[in-house]
Length: 155
Image 1 (spheres, rainbow, N blue to C red):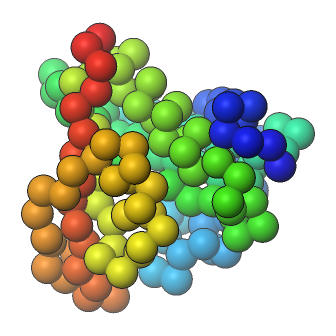
Image 2 (image 1 turned 180 degrees about the vertical axis):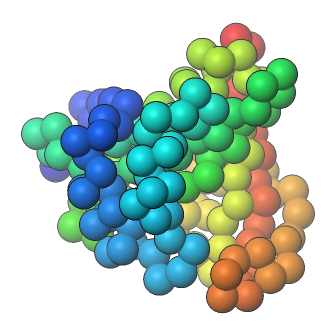
């Protein structure tokens, strides 16, 4: 795996569906995106699914939601395979998600992260995200989440 400066993300294609489902199952215990949801997100105008990995593979994925007439986008999911962690893949996917939000005219990106997910929290805070509010029982298993937000460069 290469460093984040050399990692490029691309929009997911329908051919990535099996890899996305496998990544989701390997990464998350609950609140998983289903195969049908992945299919809809890939085809949707209001969602952007980004993938990155070695030799065009899918070692990581990000899902960004956009609402019409909104200046904020939501990073719905960010997942990196355990075997690909520590190489800048999450940072590269986050940067690609931000770039996509700016391209669509958004001024801010927000996300939710489990209160105990120290690695993800460290990533988001290192990239300028600010903690906004604690969301009680946010996840399917009852776990709380922090909402983070970041202003983006002007479109």
